[in-house]
Length: 408
Image 1: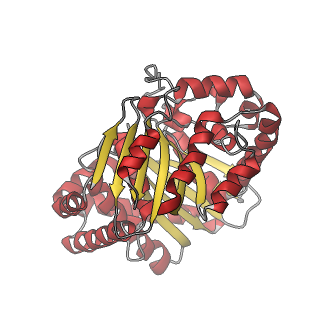
Image 2: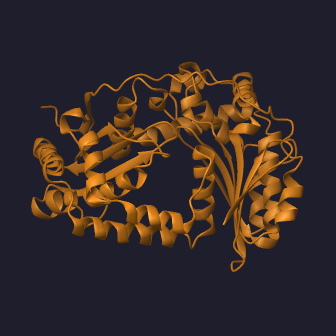
C-alpha cells in the first residue's frame, strides 16, 4: 500500500513500507524534462542532471560517489521528456545517510563553469554515441517527427550548439524556475521508518519555490513524415510510429495488451511473421510509450539494406490484419498472463516499485494497487482493443524513419 504524505512545505512523499525486505530505494522525482525547454537551452534538463554529480558546497564529485560507496549503496539519475529522477538504493539502516547525499545534490550543487566545461564534453560524447547507434537514432528521430508540432518532440540531449550556450547563469535560472515543490515528489519503497523519513524531509527543500508558472508548451496537431538517414552501416534500421494515448487514459491496458500481442514477445505477430516466417529481421518489436499529455505506438526492425521495402510491407500487412480481424480471445488471454506476470515480477524489486510509484503519482496523482492492476488487465476485451486498433493502426498514418547505408 502506497501512502502519500504532503508536508507543510508542500513536498509530497510516496511511501511504500515493505517489512519483509532489508533494503530500500529512494527517488527524488521532478516533473521537468526536455518538454519544458526552449530551443535556446535545448538539453539543459539533462545537463543539470549531469551537473548534480559534479560537486556541492559540502562534497566534491569524488566525495559524492565515495559517500554512497561507503554505504554499499547505488546512486544514479535519468532525464526524460517530462521527468527527471535522482535515486539511490541502500540497505535499510543506511537509507537516511544516502538520502543526505541526494538532498545535498538537489540543494547545494554549485554548477561551476569549469566543471560545466568538462561535463559539456561528456554530454557531447553521449550525443555522438546516439548518432553512432543507428537503432537509437532511428527511434529518436521518429519520436521527434511524431511530435514535431509538440514540445514532446524536443531532444533530451540537445545539440552541440545549444549546449555551448548553456553556462552557470542560464542553468541556474532554469533550475530555479523549473524545480518547484509542486513538481517534486520523493518516492520510497522498502523497509524504513516512516516517522524518521517524514521528520527528515520536513525542512529539506523549503528554499524551492512552491509553485511553477503555467508552462507554455508547444502543442499542435500531428502531421506524418517520412525521413531517411544515410550512414556507413551494415544494416538498415526502421522505426515507424503514430500518436497514441496518455498515461492516465482509461484504455492504458488495452494498448499494453495490444502491444504485447502485436510485437512485445517471441510469440507476437511481428516476430512470428517478419522473423520466423519471412526471415526479414533479427530484431523486430513494437513499443508503447505513455506520457502525461500524450503517447505513441511504434514499431522497430533491423533488416538488410535491400529488404527495407519488404519489411515495411510486412509491417503494413500485420497492421492491416489487425484492422480487419482484430485480436483473438486466445491471443488476449495469453497477453494478459504475460502482462500480469511481468507486473508481479517487478513487484519483487524495491527499485522497480519505487520507479512505478514515483512516475505514476507524479504524472497522474495516483498509483494502482496490485488488485487494481490485475482487475484492469482482466477487464480488457477483444472489442475494447479493436476500438483502439481502429484509432491508431492505420499504416498510412505512421511516421517512418529509415537509417540505412543504401544510397539507392
